[in-house]
Amino acid sequence: MSELAIIENAALVIENGIITFFGKMQDLPSNDFNEIDCTDKVVMPGFVDSHTHLLFAGSREEEFAMRSRGFTYQQIAEQGGGILSTVALTRAASKKELKKNARRYIHKMIQKGTTTVEIKSGYGLSFDDEIKMLEAIKELQKEEIITILSTFLGAHAFPPEYKNTPEQYVDLICSKMIPYVGEHKLAEFCDVFCEKNYFSLSDSEKILSTGINYGLKPKIHAEELSNSGGAILAGKLKATSADHLEHISDEGIASMKEGGVVAVLLPGVSFFLNHNYAPARKLIDNEVPVAIATDFNPGSCMSYSMPLMLTIACTQMKMSPEEAITAATINAAAALNLSSEIGSIDIGKKGDMLILNIPNYKFLVYHFGENHVYKVIKNGTYLEF
Image 1 (tube, rainbow, N blue to C red):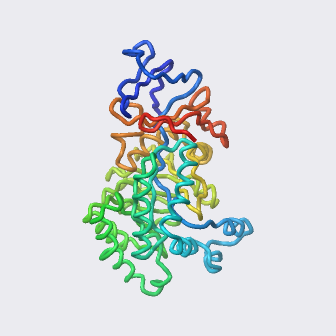
Image 2: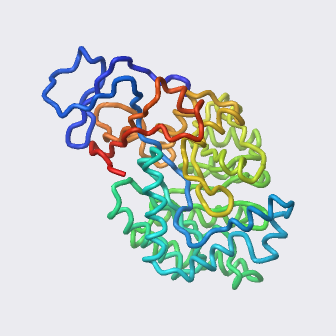
Image 3: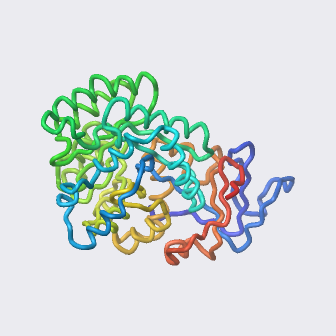
């Protein structure tokens, strides 16, 4: 993760959206191209944000204010806040309204250098509303130039109507939601929030295993609030990724390594909620591939800035700038099963590039709070914003 393979005085050729050459300028096979002068700039792969909840209605700034005054999550929930407040607003919103809101965030993401994003459902928590969310995501996939991956997260929380019968909601997910999602190809992944007072280890395994049977690759929210065993389950199921991991155990790290699971760390959440940070150094030192994502959502990280996540990873999680950049590009692509297509500059990969107005790559994480993106190139095309 520390080797970026920097090329000085370089040339890069993109033809029909695909990289066909990269190397030293003097080795450029021809100069018969539409040329972009990147003198005194840095060119790097576009950011891959592999964990977001950006399809939602409303906002929760009042909860942020309450937390700053000392209210706990439970106290906020008792006053009508938390995930279920967003669920109520998302259920009330039309698909058109949800897409309009999401599109606004997507365009701002692109301006900050994100060229691929994963979007989860999980604020519907009913058959009709989860399907509404996934259909909205699928329509955005076709309508927006950014690459979008879809994840079914019906197991985000228990809806109020199943508060006293949670086992019935798990059955609804497995018997009705997942079969419909799989058969209609509404998502690439199935995710679950494995945590005390949410979905148990046995519930999580049942849900993810059902998803696998219907062609949905497993992901898991694991060890965010406590050591629930989700990372061990991720290794057992050979999940694409296990995300959060603030309270991961040594056994969980070993299981993820053996199962080839990518660790998706979300530094913005720990920063925003003032919680523990995931042990990035320990994961890296134990040869678990580490990715960084925003977890953009209205409750625990109202930020879609990947550069900010990189700076937090360096200052709070003891990652080097090189490791953070790797985590936000090629490793993040691996967390979406896309590392053969995007995430690095290589012949045959998509031409998803950032031109940064900075003197060197370290400046990206050093000068935080500033948007250093000069130009975004997606599939070989300049994006105007």
